[in-house]
Length: 158
Length: 305
Ligand code: SF4
Ligand code: FES
Image 1 (tube, each protein chain N blue to C red):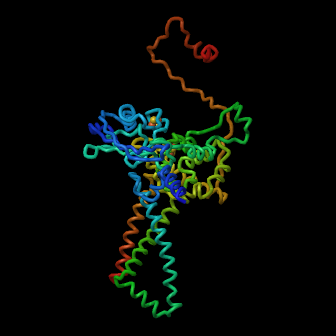
Image 2: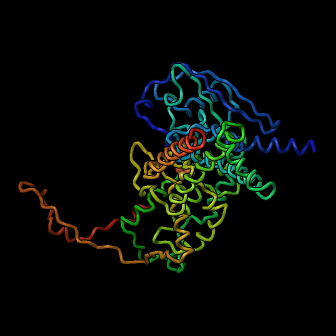
Image 3: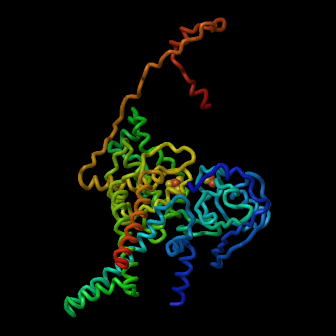
């Protein structure tokens, strides 16, 4: 046992890539918001999976205690409680995952907005980093923040 | 490429730079950080600095390099957290007067052999796996060609960029997918697969498309585009993989028909004649008319002796 753990540590030390996997910010790259979106997509994906799991459990309240209890629970989300804040955070993750997912379908399946192959010339910035998909990333982030704030307004302030 | 600003690169570096190197001794299995301070000069690259340290301070420092001009792709390292070619990176780009420290580590996602030297066996195995060469059905014709394959400048431009790859491995070391799944083919191999799939002279595209059609192939990529951000040759592997994937989807939907160019006669265009200036005179005894009609003969036998 002790030996295998040591072997694992040695293996990981010989492959420093695992650190880049655990710590997304170990690599310092400029001009690469795609990577930020990539890591956020992963993190929000995990949160979304958890959320769906809990969501299924909580939405069977009507089966357990009747519709009245369920409506009561939904109404409780309007006040600022730990549950409603967690719900709001989870909704942020779901929103980002969804909007970014649409962007990824456009870019990954249809190869949209990644420019044309070209003869490299200074300042040597790859066409895919200059293409229209870059604007789409900015749109994704802007839309996400606007929708999330709007959701907060609707949930807590009206 | 990782932000190249000529104004910064041509500045003189700080007079003294502290180089912090990640050392690894395979015999004892120990890894540690080692500090060196060196005097710099204008135009000093990180590779120069490392070689100076190897000459003057620590002879055991192990690294790989060859051309010193970003052509061979041997000297990839993680410099201040960014995968870069050591010979292409000016000290002035990574060290500044208020922070004259350069951290040099081996490339991520590769096995470390010793110090900064990484093992490229897997990398080249993957490169070989995608069959990075022209495949023709008529092998006899390919081996003993009588004619040449047609390739128009437009077709050439489609894959020229991807053919610039120097196999330095920086893209692989920046790839967040590769960090978690070492069976992933990696940006370099996939970009090369795409380069040959769209080459109109190649007929092996079906084999390659089958090969990359898996989670370890194109479907492993999620467009973090870090490969394109670090590539020193502006190969743009990220775009190549997205194109390869959409092409694969088209192929599966039977919408993809590849244009294949066969052998053709070489172009024999009659060149336009440039008229001599009016006052030009030939040397005595030279007959221009006769020279023009005479075919050019290169005496190969004499040259090869
Ligand atoms: S694609 Fe670019 S970064 Fe990757 S191996 Fe080739 S030259 Fe290096
Ligand atoms: S030494 Fe050849 S690429 Fe750096």
